[in-house]
Length: 96
Image (cartoon, rainbow, N blue to C red; front, side, top):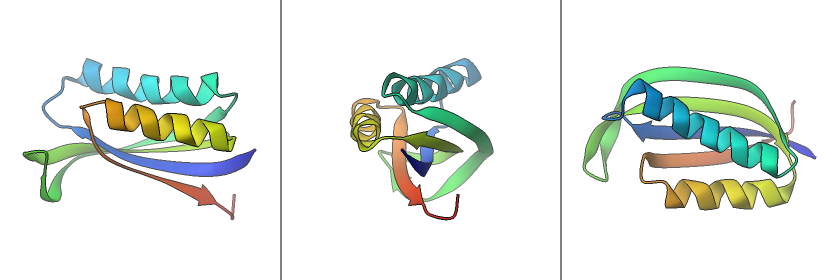
């Protein structure tokens, strides 16, 4: 397993419960793929540099986790299928 850091931006128009549900969904995909979630950090609501899907604001989150390559493919698939996720980025950490 490798160490990863996932950044994602969720639609700011969602309620706090809906945002939490989206985050739990991401962690669920990691867990189903035999990964483990480490630190989860919220950066709060911020303005986007440019409009994304007609939105000007989003909730920023970072999740550190360990997973196999299979989990990364599943995560990216779930991001693309989830309309509330505006942008995402998954990086492999070498310094963990």
